[in-house]
Image (cartoon, rainbow, N blue to C red; front, side, top):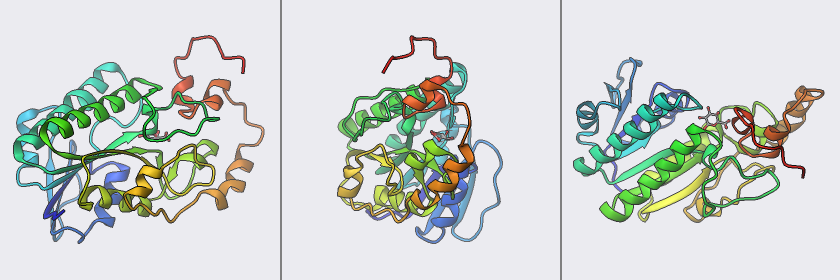
Length: 270
Ligand code: 15L
C-alpha cells in the first residue's frame, strides 16, 4: 500500500507521541492531530487540532489522507457521557469522514478491555466474541463492529489492534502478560498501513511475552515478529508486588481492575 500522508489522531497521548517519533520520516507526510494543542510541526509533519466529536472539523482533519492511525477518544474507563462523545460519536465521525474522503486504511486502537472478562486461565485468539469489562471496553467492541461494517460495506481496510499495555516497561504483574513496547507497536502499525491484503483483521497489540494470555497467530500470519518479552523483568515486577492485597475479581480476569470496578455480581467460587 502506498501511503503518502498518514494521520495520527490522539497524537498528544502517550502512544501518539511515541509513534510521532518512531514513524518520523517513514511516510512523506505525517499529519498529527489532537483535541488539545500539541508540539509544532517539524519537517514532514502537519499539525492539526480537532475535536473528533465535531463532524465538520473531522472532515477537514482527514482531507488528503491515505491512512489513519486512530488513537483519539477516551483511553480508559469514564462516564457514559464521555465515552459516548469520544468513542462512539467521535469514532463514527472519523470512520464516516474517512469513507467520504476515500481513505484506504485505518489502524485502530481497540483494547484488551474489549475482551477483559475472559479469565486469565484461558488463552484467547482473535475469533472470540467480545466480553467487555467496562463502558470503555464496550466502546472498543463497538469500534471493532463499526470497522467490520465499513470493511464489508465500503471496502475499507482495517487493522484492529487490541492493545495491551504500551510502554517501555511492564508496570505490574498483569501487564507482564499484555505489555507492548514502542518498537513492537510501531511494527504492528506499519503492517496495518502497508500490508497489501488487509480487509478486516483483529490482532493483539502485545509483545512476544512468555506470559501472554493471547494466541496472536493472526498477527504473526500478517508478518508481525515482535522483538520484546516482559520475562526478563518479571522477577523485579513480582518482587515489588509481594505482600500486596489483591481483589479476587481483578486477579481472576484478564481485564484486572477494570473488571473489579463497580463489580457487584456474585464472586465465582472457582
Ligand atoms: C487500555 O486500554 C488503556 O488505554 C490503558 O490506559 C491501560 O489501562 C491498558 O488498557 C491496560 O489494560 O493496562
